[in-house]
Length: 408
Image (cartoon, rainbow, N blue to C red; front, side, top):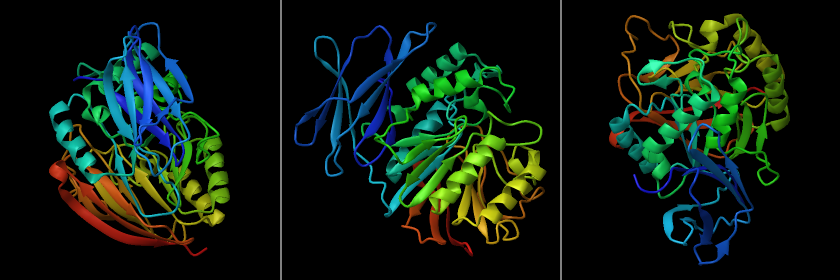
């Protein structure tokens, strides 16, 4: 495909971060023009590479943006020829009506189905995209699992994925925030024993720009890959379900302490996002409830004691999608888990007829899919949720609407 893979990362009303994947040896310059023809310079340009790869990643930090303008990023070669151009906008993160999309499991081996699915995402016109795990099937090479993966192997698989997927060639960029699961962590069913976990985080952050900056106060980093992103009146907590996992815990004491402290300080309805399922003890695959049931009970009890604004749970990984109602005995109010998977990867029969999920409200299996949510500005203790499970050709495979009201 012509041009370069490009991703828009952290973005707010006045600034954005953009990653451009380029040949290491190629000389490029970057030009930004607003819709009136005025030229802007990137506030900073950073370059990331490793010795074993001919491909580098360039990060552009662009500031002094206006919500009323559209912008064009132009890539020029040494003589000044335009080799690629993309449009982007700043993002109003204030409490307002907005649409988000949530996706997981992006296996580049499923290239033809991926094109239809990314077209569906594009057609939904999300304001913000969450990629919540297995965004790169890093430790799968030539159909085989190689785990754990070192930095050079991880880098190669990230490059291959960015070169393959249509999403990174969109003419109109979409702000994207991420967390990971085991495949992009580089270790099948990975945990804290991964000897390359720091290298894994370094590679992910090179390709998915999420640098701390005073220009994006809405973004706060936590332990490992965890982060908090405040948008549209909500807190989105993207948790690291791999770096601290052991036989007793999914997230580790340090990350949980950070999460509870931030939930208490934020005082906003929040989305708790993890790469694998929260409430999945009904099946044999990975989930917090299935792998660490006692730890989950303690986690939920601490949430209950905090008496925060209401929370909902979001997950991926399962290669099927479902909406589950979480009973009020855990938090003092009913809430929900939304599992979105797979955007493009192998799908499996759910076996819900023989292994039912007693909490399930709706679910979709054996079809590629992602979720969208139409957000309303939240009330302090009441969240209205309206969304859909979307398949190929923008087909709504299921719709849902509910509210979550805490008793705080």
